[in-house]
Length: 141
Length: 305
Ligand code: B12
Ligand SMILES: Nc1nc2c(ncn2[C@@H]2O[C@H](COP(=O)(O)OP(=O)(O)O)[C@@H](O)[C@H]2O)c(=O)[nH]1
Ligand SMILES: [Mg+2]
Image (cartoon, rainbow over all chains, first blue to last red; front, top):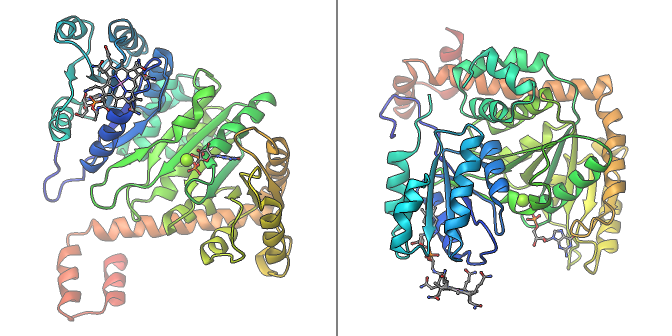
């Protein structure tokens, strides 16, 4: 949503970037956080070793538009659906949940089934992620 | 999702999602939430509003975590607002203060919110303390507000606290930079954090000597403490010092000083908006650019009519 001349400037999109589980690969999450900042997003970075509950709690308190989960550990099939469930159980129905990292193609369909909106693998350009978030994040009223 | 008065009622009644939405409305200057401001203020339960400021990396977030641990031990519910600078180029921001809050993540008696400063003129100081007021209304006391102690907008946030804690770190050299003086000017309590590092005692001594001779605002110099935020050492005495300052901050004189700052802030902010909102704004800018009118007369003209 870009504000035209004379319109009130729309508030920046707020994104939570979280690293679920025991995965220590944080390079991608940090690259993403900086990249999104440079694209004009307000990024809240939680750091490593987040439980599904911690992520849902943070998303709730921060009232983010997007939750971005970065996972390279291989535990995505157990962790990601639980995070979606936790977030939805707190009535955050309109929050966009996306993921990235090392996720085999075969797992993509079931994860989308579980409520992950989109999955971005290695080599994705930040500009493409930013565009996707702008197009799919809820619009505030 | 509720909005208007129902949103406020839900937020004050313990609905965390409603509270989060209310804070967003304040931050985004949502007109519906603007109408709630008198009620938010009326719902205040008198929380202690504490600013925590200091240079980047001084250990503010770690200290906020340690302070929260101590306040929780004392049975208090803690509200936290962490303000980080927005990029002046893109308007984006990275807010990493939650990283240090891990141990409190599952505690429902804590509510933490990250805010981006959204530019010098964005009214961040006012918005921050309105967010703090909403947390107060929701039953959090104290409300701890962390800001990076650099830049005018951030100093303004610190100035509007009831009790401002300035976090310093041990210095290697002897010189005390000018930036420190600016920060110290708003200090009600000073802590030299990272006291596990060499030179902490000496730094505290230097600060003490510096403030002792200063007079004026420092006729009664603020207490200077030592903390190790990572281990929690010295944090209980710091909470004691903050608590002790609450009485000073609530004296009629001090309340008036703070109220005056708040009013001044609000007047500047409101008049700027009123002037900017006028149809004559653009033509007035042009008139000044073309040297047809001076800015002061132009401002009077915009505000008086
Ligand atoms: C660098 C690296 C490390 C570094 C990590 C440094 C750090 N602090 O991040 C070190 C050496 C520490 C390391 C350790 C290990 N690693 Co390693 N590591 C890698 C490596 C080579 C590159 C990862 C990387 O940083 N890429 C660069 C970043 C920028 O890319 P990215 O993370 O993929 O992110 C991009 C996208 O995926 C996407 N994205 C990522 N997250 C998100 C989130 C959202 C919301 C969105 C929208 C997009 C998005 O956007 C980014 C930009 O394009 C990968 C192999 C690979 N080619 O990916 C293996 C790899 C991830 N590691 C692996 C393994 C097994 C390990 C170890 C277990 C090895 C061991 N036996 O000790 C340990 C575990 C460490 C731990 N505690 O978790 C495996 C994982 C296998 C799996 N999942 O099934 C990989 C795939 C290597 C392999 N082929 O076997 N590793
Ligand atoms: N040695 C030492 N390190 C500390 C102390 N307090 C904080 N730190 C470290 O200083 C770094 C910055 O801390 P942080 O709380 O993020 O600082 P902030 O930028 O002021 O919020 C982190 O690596 C902390 O672990 C302390 O008392 N002693
Ligand atoms: Mg910090």
